[in-house]
Amino acid sequence: MTTNGNGKGGRHRVEINWTEFEGYCAMQCTLREIADYFNCSEDTIERRVIEHYHCGFAEIFKRKRQKGLMSLRASLFNLSKKQGNVAIFLAKNWLGMVDKQEVDVTNKDAAVEDLTDDELAWIVKGGSRRGTVKATVSPQSVN
Image (cartoon, rainbow, N blue to C red; front, side, top):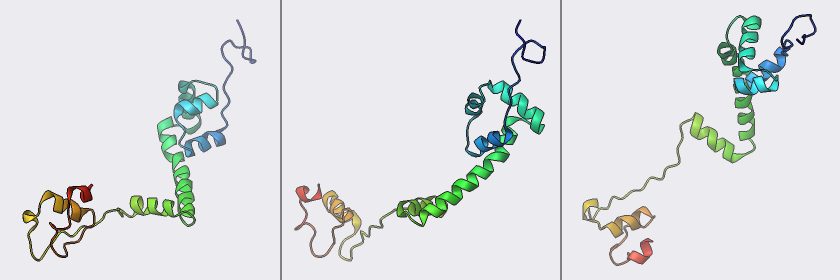
């Protein structure tokens, strides 16, 4: 039988650097990824977390990941000052802004119900109802 250095049989005790562990939680690493990093099983991480923090992995992960989310949010915010596409992403996701194009299909002379499919398609693509649409719209110009 092999010994683990303390005269007892079995595997050696996996040492966990709790600062690193908390850093990986902040980076949103999964239990499996953290266990792989420390070269042990997920069950070992679960047991060691209970020993160290007196609660389960899920609870600690929930608490420690907040620091990572705050850091990510700050990084995105700072990046948005330099990159317009990031600012657009944040405006859509945080401010609820959307890309939509308003199309006005009203006409003083005709109701929408009176328009043909070709006329409607032409208007939606940016055409104007100045004058008679039927004279300017053809199936080739709609495509």
